[in-house]
Length: 336
Image 1 (cartoon, helix red, strand yellow):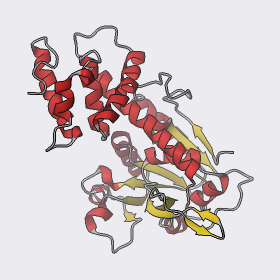
Image 2 (tube, rainbow, N blue to C red; image 1 turned 45 degrees about the vertical axis):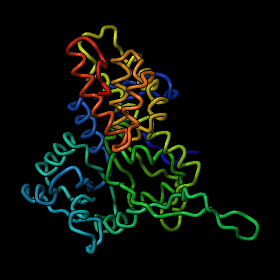
Image 3 (cartoon, rainbow, N blue to C red; image 1 turned 180 degrees about the vertical axis):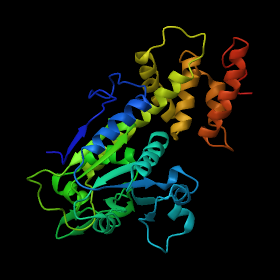
């Protein structure tokens, strides 16, 4: 049984198989903000917010300008730039402070709201224990102990202050893992646009004891997490295609865009295009070439030419393609 009751308060995508067409567009910002405010209003007790410093040049300074105090969830010895881009916990004690935080979240998708009956200090101590998570090592080396294999783990940063990360991770946790995640808190609210929109997760009455030690994800959980992250990446690529469809194209709907996104993946893998941005650009090239670009020897050799990564090459290819489209001859001279 999955862990916690993670409720989708403002759904933005269908619960369907990966190949089916989801809702591609992001939800309306104003409506998301309204639903988020209402959901936070329904939380029990005082509400504390954790903000993602990575969305800003200097979040502490921006909050101080609004008389909002905050404290880092990273240890003092962490380098300043890394610390500044990390999680910051703030207590919003007035309506104006909360309104400002909500404005920041609406425009930067950067806030996780926590309800903790025992107070912010206990929550602060707890959250500092969540900054790392244990995941299975991928080097394929298992140690033999008593004739049985023992999976080896490594510590990685757990960005629990990023709403989209929580949208991917919380649904895969067991109930005891979720109890470990909540600690002294009784619920959280966040807006993860790529993972269901506004979500609320609350401690159940029959919640088991928390798992001991740091959060530790199993192999099956990592596979589910990778699948969720892949789906999210596909959604962002589909939005890129939908936004950048050439004006002379007709009959382009979400089914077409989603199908084009999935269809471009095989050739992107073959050509070694790894980054999400590179794969989005490659999907665009495949669309404007009516799926023919991958079969053109000049295009393939250009992308795989030594001296630059395939992702960098496909960026150059985009420029050639756009120029060619202006003259009505897509991919003319693309590899020159």
